[in-house]
Amino acid sequence: KSAQGTYLNKQKISPENYYRIYVGSMIRFGASSRLHILCGPDSHQQPEYDSTNMQIYREKLTNKSIEKKKKVEETNSLGISWGFGEDAPDNDSDNSDNENIPEYLKNDENYDRKYGKIYTSNIDEQEI
Image (cartoon, rainbow, N blue to C red):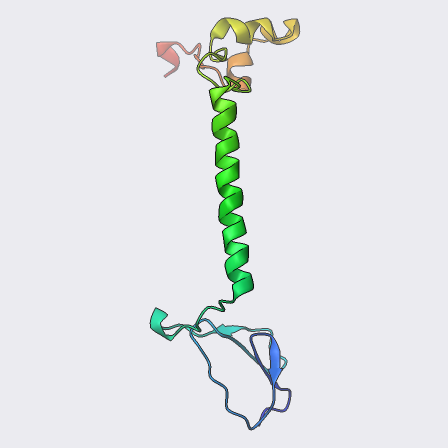
């Protein structure tokens, strides 16, 4: 008999009673902060709760996902791409990067090293 109780799936269980423990059940003994989870084969898991309300809820979820897919297809068929389509401007060009940079950064000799562009060193062969 436990002095501080035993918890099964976060619910205190009464002493001197037997309980069926399934795979995936969480057990905590007394005031311990450790949680023990029972491992085992999938065939020993607790059967999933399935009611008419749960079935209705699942049907609503599938209907919502189908509606969302239809909306996405409709917007794609209208030609709306929100700038992510193939005709979106390419931001990888070097000219567009240099145009948006302030003058004080353009003149910085360490710009390449600081901001991720290709870095070239000015080390002579004698220094190596």
